[in-house]
Length: 173
Ligand code: Y12
Ligand code: CO
Image (tube, rainbow, N blue to C red; front, side, top):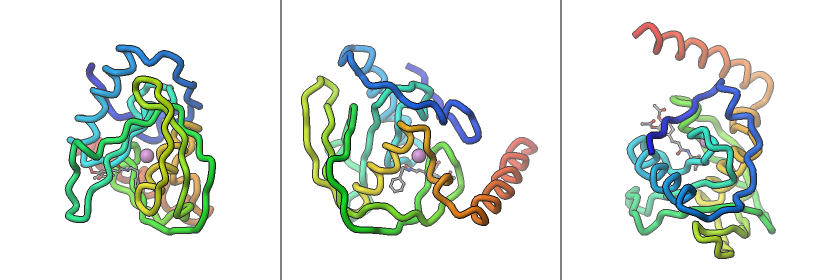
């Protein structure tokens, strides 16, 4: 399956993704195609809507203490629901759909996540730190929300100006 990353300001990123009801070969081939795309673009998280599939599915691969990503650490998360959140943490986030921009965003530091795996089995996960941040970032995508939506008015205006310039330069080069 050939996938490409949908980039801001593409309106498809604003779609609210639908619950996954069939844990079938179609879902498996989508997940199997998302993983190499995420790895080859240095991503640590990717939601299905970022590859134009509006379903409640996302993948994560958080680097270890040496900064390495291992296939063993791949998480495939379907129909996620956060049941508990606590604490606060600030982190400079980036997004494969908003290339070249990083902004400080405040998130919950700890969370409990209920989700399904690719076969529909129910799972629970306790997350903290970077994993917790990444889950919240990717779950926002399922609602059509981007990290840049969380910026102050002034920072968002600055971002829009710089992003427009970046797109123009990219088009000219
Ligand atoms: C913490 C903060 C944000 C997340 C969400 C997942 N975000 C990413 O995986 C971002 C990846 C990313 C990769 C880039 O590198 C390339 O595209 C090669 C990148 O650089 C450029 O756009 C030039 C930007 C973002 C999880 C945890
Ligand atoms: Co993102």
